[in-house]
Image (cartoon, rainbow, N blue to C red; front, side):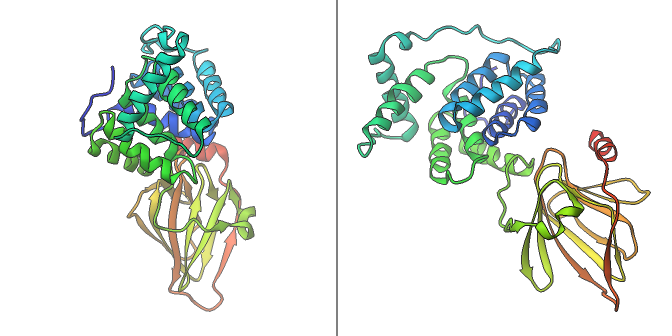
Length: 325
């Protein structure tokens, strides 16, 4: 069940580890619960998830680590037949020998970095990294070194302001046994599935002027020439509405979302999807429940007296039925 070094395609198990790590790092416990269930369905063991969430306290803090373990505990209240406990947990010998833990940490850190790394600027952190993170934590045997870096890259991908650490661990993931192709695929997969929002299109500012017409948070970036980029957080959607005397055009540029006209089946939107919405058609659009979503929008064929009419919200019942499909 361990990760395969030099694989060029992510396994479902690796995707399970990565999705849980990314959502745990973001503190998104709502999305984490179904992700944990899916990971267990896809072959990640219970003890591997415990190890992953424990390791990530070093990158995301104890509060999020403990919250994620709480989600796992809740999920296990209704276990499924195919879920596996995994390898029994054993206390690492290094925990009882500080010198041995430190030496293991130096070895692991050197392999991950590609060279001996000494952080002389801050001896405290240098010791913590060697003795604890790459020593005590890496001494556990539930995850391989390659697994650990998949988990770390996924977690850092979900955080803002950690670009230098993410870049270092992407290279470290290769140094610890994963292929460059797999690491690149991992990051692209997290983006394409909406776990992260890494887009060349600006997120913009909170869409406060229209917040009353949205469920969830949205953001607006003025691209000039009458074009805007709208960013929806997972689960965010606008109310039913009508564009009078004008055609609205939507172009999905990132993530996954939905578009639906009144009385018709919903349409999925993924990068490259273009939808021209005729004037006078009642409709709504927004993000998938588990994905960020960005689309460009502009109007054409604008006639005198053009306007927007905002109507009722898209209820949870309607939205959740759509999501279940």
